[in-house]
Image (cartoon, rainbow, N blue to C red; front, side, top):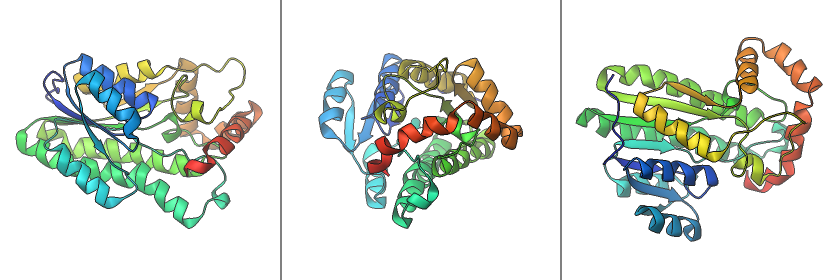
Length: 266
């Protein structure tokens, strides 16, 4: 399959107000991309846009009309990075129906819709790349994260299948799956606490892997220390064993520390 060139490519990055989204934007800019940045907070996007010479489109991805407007204003895309997502820790019984639907919309339905609309033009032009930002939570289920697991498992399945659908069309699809990210992102914003010895990755590492996924047409890139990658692989095959091991290692306590910090963002 043809690999996408980033230099001169028009690239949309959603969720660009967050630290991870900002670093993805900077990494693509360094490779010569023409950037379109989207998010809900103008006070963060506008200074970043000035830094990178990017276009800003304010949009709330929970609003279907905003999604349609974003795609129309962004115009033809060579690269889509669907990075925006809502945190979703906590027990399912704590969620209202409206919160469940909003989470599924932003974390799963909208990336699928955006991929579909972007892919149409990419297929017509004979090139393009779609990057979906997933999570290790899309490979390994955890107590206290059923909603987040549901959307990230779904996003991974969609990415792998869409890649096969577009394989003959010279359009690449990648899913990039970070583990715990320090300095920025949902885990830091929720003031989550990890057990001693559990390592993290930086937003810059995630951004670097996004660039690699595009340039090398990688199907799946897990951005996490080797022990977390190994644990996720085991959990995907032996979920009951992995659940018991997580409880023994205090995994349920990790997610419990995140609930209060993320409750207002459901």
